[in-house]
Image (tube, rainbow, N blue to C red):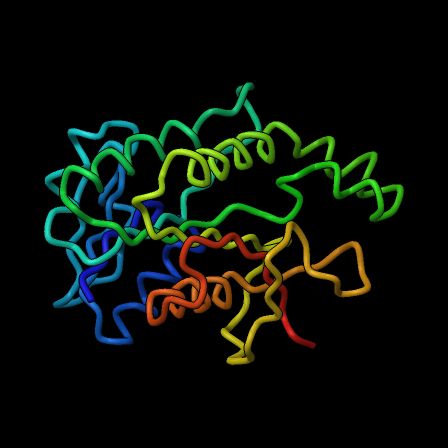
Length: 217
């Protein structure tokens, strides 16, 4: 496949790009600063683009099979708007170029009310601290649900992200805001999230779905 990747210079994005190249795909890494991409490959093109500008993205994603977003935005300044603003530009460009496959990532607890049953610290400290980010993530999810019937999206919701090699184990997947692991605090390797996102492009199992993932023990 020919894949356009946004957020390619981030930690998860770098993992995705490398795994996609290793799998034989052609990758266009769309970044604000091309110097942040240090890997070189015959099947890799690094292109400067504005993630908030449909007209900037359209010619870049032309003739691609899918768009993958590993974008992340900080909690400050508030309100957080990067997820919805970038999604609007991305989807607009995809429609203009007749690209329909979109895989992106958000997080557990985008529906923040779920935290009420997950223990004191998570409900009263962690989720409230992250709420500006989680709220905008959920707004982006709702935009895809309600306004994008023509887009074959998959939203991947991981828990806390950590670094480490790909485990090679299948993920536990739930069409929900969390995965019932028996623990309130869960972490997953960015490399495993990237691997799962790549696998979503190989089948239609998770088309037009939003799934929480967790590492199998």
